[in-house]
Each structure stands twice: as structure tokens, then as C-alpha cells.
Length: 501
Ligand code: BG6
Image (cartoon, rainbow, N blue to C red; front, side, top):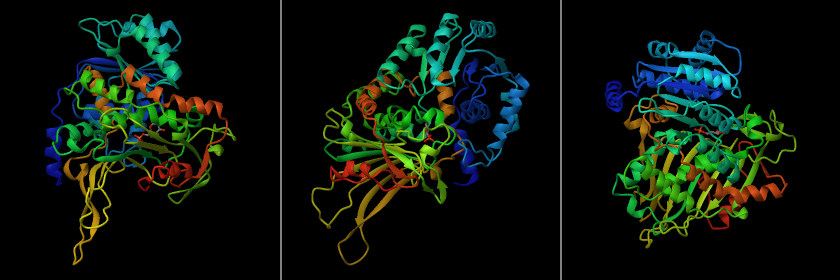
């Protein structure tokens, strides 16, 4: 696309109306999430003129700071992202007008999350104002913070002031804790006030799955057991646990990625068509399909942990050598699952999921493998595969068999592809822009409802319970490889292989 075509397309994309006036209260002002993702997203919204003039941000954290210093450190951080392609947000430049529009609206408040005075102080600042409370804090604070907000009367809505709470992940660490957290939160607020984030829902490629499936007549008729052999969903990462050992060690790959991100992808690809594009209709269907997944059998769950190796040419140490990780850790950094969905559309079609750290390549994608054509007219077929790629490519591709040019009737597999970058401008977005915009406008469609979250934990609970009993270590795979051998065996048992990494 030429530059002027890009600009014209950009204009067309951003005619959404600005959000209403509101105060955004961020618990965890000094946290990594605030710096890396929330502020860039707010800056992008400001740049797109999607925030109201009367928009304010209050940042709360335990440590000493003041508004000036906080603003200065955020300014430094956002500028450090320019041109840094390893950061989620990597703009070519920062528009100073848009950024100072944000910094003028910042206020830092030092406050203890366990002290009633903190909440009284917030209350005084947001009288009669629309308010979003964003819990960008460690998961142990979620329940107590919502309880205190409720106790302080801050979640009481009036016709002129909405009150909404955004809860980050991880939402619980198993089924009982997720149920308890939902119960605790829903005592203080009603479901419509709660926005449980899964940042995968902020990705255009994920939202596009519903457009692809339900706004084209071509795909949906074959999107079912009669035509699909199996589905693979993967989130392969090249990064290790980095500095997050403290979080990762008691969490592991399954809790970190599966009931949230991978199930989000599964729900989007496997759900029934909603009656309408609204929150209730779409969330009903997402929850229904997760509820239809049979609890995973422990023999259908494979764990791995990375050992030392080489990732993309660079030496990588073993997980057990990472900071804040036990030297005899049994935490999994890789997980593969085989799942069965017990409904008319999917009965008999296995869904294979895998995710891991320090793998050979970075790739997040869904691949629907179709059954072969019933008659092999031109000899052996490779078979059709429809791939929805999220990362690093953003594309939808269909692998098809075509006649190889030449005298002989032979087939070759080629791709028909739609690439975002070829058709639309792809500015540096972090995915939180649309999530913020949705919360501001009271749209819960992209967020996880209590029933969906609990249904997801119910599916993985048998594996979690089995591992609690079985203290043996996961299979070690070399960093930079395609994962543990047991994961290949999981598919080989069914006569199938993983998409290559
Ligand atoms: C986070 C996990 O939720 O998602 C990380 O905690 C993981 O461990 C990340 O790396 C992956 O997200 P993305 O958008 O980079 O694929």
C-alpha cells in the first residue's frame, strides 16, 4: 500500500466516537504492565482522539513518588520503546502533543491497598464521576481490592456515574480458587461491572475469527466434523521466563496460557454462530463451547521443561538455572493437550493445543486440518489446512493442492493468503486499546464472563490434580527445540503430526 492509501485507510478505520468522560484509577502505577502496555494503549487512544477532554488518570501504588516524577518516568519509558522491535509497543516516533495530552491528566497517589484511608482518598477524588478501577497488580490483590472498593461504596453506580472494574490475569489458579474469586468479586459488584481481561481478545486477528467464519458464506458450511479432521492451536514462544521466575514458578505453562489464551482461541474457532454481535449473545456461545469440552484425561496432557540449549543462535540456560526458580523445579514450561468437544459440530474431531517457552520459533496460530477429498483424482493430496496466524505474521491462509505445471498429472501444495499488512495500515498497537475503549463504553463482549472462566478451569482441573499427586519432573527439552518428544507421541498415537515449527 502507498503512504497516501495507508493514510486514507487509517482515517476510515478511526471514525469511532470518543469515550465518555471518566477517571481511570490504576492500582499498580509502578508496575510493568502499566509501563509496557497500559500507557502505550492510552497514548494510542489519545493519538486517535478517542478520549474525552475530561479524562483523568489516577495511579496508585505503595511507594513514595509524586505526580511529576511518575510522569517523568513514564515519559522516559515510552520514549525508550521507539524503534525497539523487541517491545510490544514499538512506534517510529512519539507524537509529543498526544503524549503530553496524557501526562497533563496524570495524578499519582501513594496508598496502601490494605488501608481504608486509601479508598476514602479515592472516593473524595471521584465523587459523581464515571470511574474505571484497573487492577494491574499481583493476583493475590484482586479479591481484597474489589472487596475494599465495595466496602468504601466506590462500586455503587448512579445514573450519572458508572463504576467498572478491570481484573487482569491469572484469574484463579484452579477451579476452586477461580470459583472463590468470582464469588468474592460478585458480592461487591454485579457481573456487568466486571471486565476480566484476556489480552488475546484485544488482537485484531482474534476478533477477525468471527468475521471470517460468520461474515463469509464460504467457510462455515465446511467448518464441522464432516469436513475437518482435527484442529491444532499453538502459542510457541522463543523467550524464556526472563525475570518472571517468581511468578512463573508456582504458575507453569498450563495455568499461564491454557484456560485463558488458548481457550480463547479455541472458543472463537469452535463456537456456534451467535444470534447477534452483542456481548450476551457472543459470550453465551463462547461459554457454551467451553462447557462442551470434556475434562482432560491426564494421559492426554504432556508436560515439558526447557533445559539448556541454543535459541535462535544464542545460548540459553536451563529453566532450573533461571532467577527465582528452584534447582529441582518440576514446573512445566511446555504443555500439550488433546481435547474433545462433545457437541454435534465437533464430536470425534480432536483439538490439539500446545504452548511453550524457549522453543525454536515464535508462532501463534490455529490450523484447521481438513479431511482429504474423497477421490484421489490426481494422486496423493497434501490436504487442505486453513491457518489463522496471529504472531509474528497476521494472516489467514489456506493450503490447497494445485496441479503442478507440466506434462504429468501431479499435485503441489500452495498457499492462498490474506495478510493484514498488505491490505490495512498496521500501526504499533498493543491490543489494550480496544480493551480500554470497550470498558469505557460499557461493552463486555471482549471480556471473560464468570461461567466461561470456571468452565475452562473445570476442563484442565484433572491434569492439575494428577500433577499434584505425581511429583515426577516433566520431560526436559533442549531450549531452542520443538518441545518434548512426548508431545510428538501424543499425536503419533492418533497417526498425526504437529505443524512444523
Ligand atoms: C501472557 C503470559 O499472558 O501472555 C506470558 O503471562 C506470555 O507468559 C504472553 O508470554 C504471550 O502473549 P503474546 O501476546 O506475546 O503472545
